[in-house]
Amino acid sequence: AIARQKTARCPVPMAAGATRPRPVASSVPEAEAPPLPELSEERKVDLAELLRAPQPDDAATVELLLNPTPDSAGAVTAMMETARAGPPRYDCFISTGVAPAFAFSAFRHRNAEGGFQYDVRLTPTESSRVGTNSFCAQLKCSADCTRYTLCDDPSNFYSYPRELGAVFVGGAGLGNRISVLVPRVLPSGAAAQFRVLRPEDGIISRFLAGQAREHIMTLSGLWTSKEGGTVELTLGGEGTAASQRRTVFRATQSSSTLSLQYSSPLSCFQAFCIALSLVHHAQHRRRPSSEPRRAYGSPRRPPPPPQEQ
Image (cartoon, rainbow, N blue to C red; front, side, top):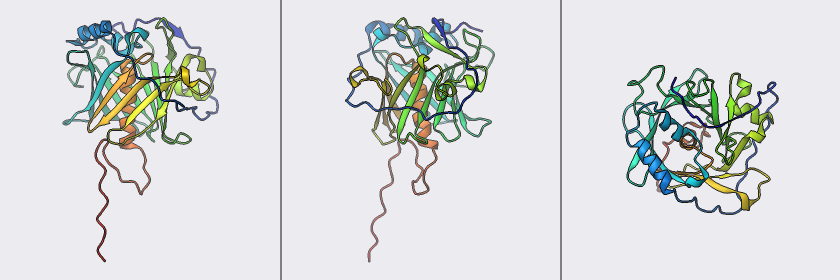
């Protein structure tokens, strides 16, 4: 398999066994977070060169898209678009200062557990390059559309299944809150590695069992599906002073497009999967019987005119 993600390793000790889960901790910033910093010119050049004509499964391209964004890079601007034809597909493009560069496509499928999963590829088609070395990461969705797990391509540099994060949207005890878990990233850029060989090894299971939390970074915010609404995620959980929190992800929705901004410690893959989770939750979550189902981004139906007496 092609070598991928040659970043430094910070192994996480394996879990001894599953324990009773606890509610996810989430918080909302008490003060308005400062704007995300501008993307550095050096990072723009790197993105433009590697994404101008990337080869599928190119190791350098995979490293750029899956590794954490460096602190010095500032904020990356991207967008996620819904395909207007064919099977359900979402495309991610990165702004490089010249023109948007294609990064990922995600294809939605049903899974054996009754939920959905998204196959994330470096090409806008699934059938053209399906083989042993064809990059395919996944976003796995729970049946109730409240939990999402970010999974690396199994044929990665480490040759074992890895989880790169998790998203909680709504659900019991969360309301309209969002909690995002990502492996801890050190100032050097080294990221914790969540090796998953058993269900209890996963990042969600470990976090809910109170294990390996020192190896997990938490992001939190509020969820909305309103036209033109903005979702912001702030780094820092409960107990973190407002002055120490910072916005690391922002998504603004308009019709079939999400405008994205993300910065360290998130990677492009993680930011894309967070955006996918928001869209999937809006489209497929279980609604009260009184709430009509509508496509994400579509205008709400106007109320019926009053009846004449």
